[in-house]
Amino acid sequence: MKARTLSRKNAAAAAAAIKKSSGLSETPSHDWNLNPSNLEDAIETIRTLEREIARTIAITQKQVEQLEGLANFSAILNSTLDTDTIRFKSMEAVCNLLNCETGSLLLVDPSTKELYWETALGEGGERLKHSMRLAIDDTSIAGHVAATCKTLVVNDVKLNPYHLKKADSTAGFETKNMVCSPVVSKGELIGVLQAINRIDGNFTNEDAAFLEALSFQVAIAVENANLYSRLKNTFIQTAAAMAEAIEAKDRYTGGHTKRVVQYSLAIGQYVKLSPIEREHLKLAAILHDIGKIGIDDKILKKQYALNDEEYDVMKKHPAIGYEILSQVSGLKEIVDGARYHHERPDGKGYPYGLKGSEIPKVASIISVADTYDAMVSTRPYRKGLDPKVAFEEIVKYRGTQFDAEVVDAFRTAFESGTLKKKIQE
Image (tube, rainbow, N blue to C red):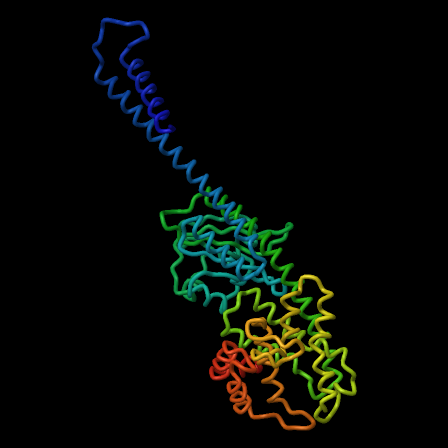
């Protein structure tokens, strides 16, 4: 329909141009001789008009695509609060929307007032992240943009006085052109956003304006993610402090929770877990023995092996932990990870006698980590086992006492040295 309407307009414009150039009027005339030069002018006018229409359509289409891209970009940034995911997706979106080879997000280090590469795509970007920092001054393009808080388009980087050649040599990458924009939140500079090496020519002022719009969205997303991260870390630190307070009752179990967390995370690297399940694993491992707060000190601090009656009391600690943690809304998955860490695939665990798939994977991981640490740790009534012996014991009970997939992951973590490395860290 649009094409038909456009054709009619072109035809009408052509007819009007021909009439004007040839002297024709609405009133019929018997003089049908057309001036060839006037006709050529009219045709050229039509062609010019068509080119302008095509150019206008192309610009409009680009603007529509950018607006759609900006809306999608906003949706991507609001889809998660994971800081690393947000920053990586931000750079991918910048490259797609501005049609450039790569991009980077540099953030301000509050303690040193320097810029560091938080996210930079490609292998060269990874090298920059670990080896370079930039002063907020005129010694680099990003530093200049940060110092002035003004977006800058540079279409020949080699001729720019702020170009830092060291960055290219470190990354093993040639920067040809770029557009660079400050990232500002609540009036405060938090970083710089760069789009590098446009694929189809030079960057334009329109690209600069578009990157400014993207940087505004990035600023909001980064601030929200940082806030969430701070709150999460505060909660984890509080939980860890609670666990350490319980361990303080018994000097022989000191550090047990911290080691179980590290072992659990090492094993979890080789188990198919979603990012959120990995977070649940860490917190559940921290809280796995929180129920021991309800166990009598005479049992908890006993320097000899527990008798049957005392052991029955000790076996209640997962249920006690559940009663405590279930009071906190939104922690169901975490609660279950701690609640079921003494259950067994063969149904001989405690306190509920769950079997197989009834046991959450997070709980199964903590079970292996907890048992391994218990075996290699020295107690008043026995010396800790050699790690190799403890390893063989866990592998021996694969599929009965311990989840088969988790034991396989434990084997990989142990044999690769990941388990030992985590503790050293």
